[in-house]
Length: 375
Image (cartoon, rainbow, N blue to C red; front, top):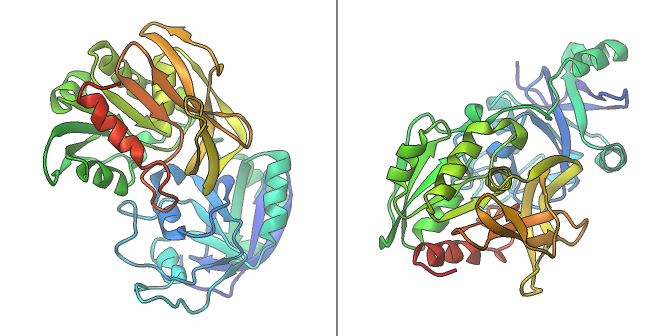
C-alpha cells in the first residue's frame, strides 16, 4: 500500500449500494462491518479503540481531522479500525497539540479509507438496512466491476459469530500503580482502552491488566480485591472463556465491574442471552437513564450487541437476583445490570470519558465502594 490522497476509491456494501470518492490514508483494499459513529469529536480515540477491530467506521460528523493527531490521546498501541469513511477531512490540522495529520497516521498504519462521499446518505442507508459488510477499494481496484467487488465483500466473515478478543488483548500482563493504593484490581483485557485503568488508579486502585486467556485461579489470585472486565470487539456469544472467568468471580464472591463487552460477559454468566442490534450504538452523546434514581446521563458508546433482559423486575439467576439498572432512552436497550446477592454490576457504555462526556465517571467510585464492602 502507498500513501495518497487523490486516488479514485469506491465503497461497496454487501447489498450492492456503492459510493464513489477519493482515497484517504493507505491505497488498497479493505473489508469489514460498516458502522457509523455520531461523535462530533474524539476521532483519535475512536480510531485507537480496540472495540472497532474488524469494522469500517463511518463518521457522521462531516469535517474530521481539524485538530490533527498526537501521542497523548491514543487509547491503545495502534489504530484498530478496518477502514475509515469521511466526507471532508481537514487538509491542514490546526491545534497546539497536533503533531501529525490524520491522513499521515492512517497511511502509516496501513488503514484504507475513503473521502468525499455522502456520509449522511450512507448513514441513513445503514440505519434503514442495518450494519452490514462493506469493502473500500482504492487505486486501480476502484474501477473493477461492482459485481466482483460485492462478491469479495460477501466473502468477508460477518461480525455475528466472530471471536476477536485474542486479536486485541495484551500479550503480557502489566501494572499501573495507584497514586495512593487502597485496592488491588485485575483488569481482564478484552480490548481495554488506556484511560480506563487510569481512572481506577486515580481512585486508589493498583491495576494489573491481564490477557484475556488468563486462568481463572490466576485471575482471582491477581485481583485480590476486585476484577474489572473491559470493553472489546466481537460477538459476546463467541466469548466462552471470558464468560467462564466471570462465573469464577461470581462464585468466589469477588467484586466485579464490567463495561461494554464486559457487561455482556456478566449477562451471559448470569444466564441471560445477547443479540445483535440493527445498527448499534456508537458515539459520545447517548442518553442513558438510571432506573433507580431517574437520573439521565449522556454517555459514550461503542457496541453492536446487547443483553436481553426484562427491565422493572428482579430476575432469578444461578447467582441470585439481578436487576436491569440502566436503559438507553433512544430505544430502551439494556444499558446496565446490578446483582442483588453477589457483588457485581456492569454498564453497556464507556465511563472512562475518552473521548466523551464525564457524566458516568462516578461508576469507578462505585466500584471502589463495592470493594470496600458497600453495595
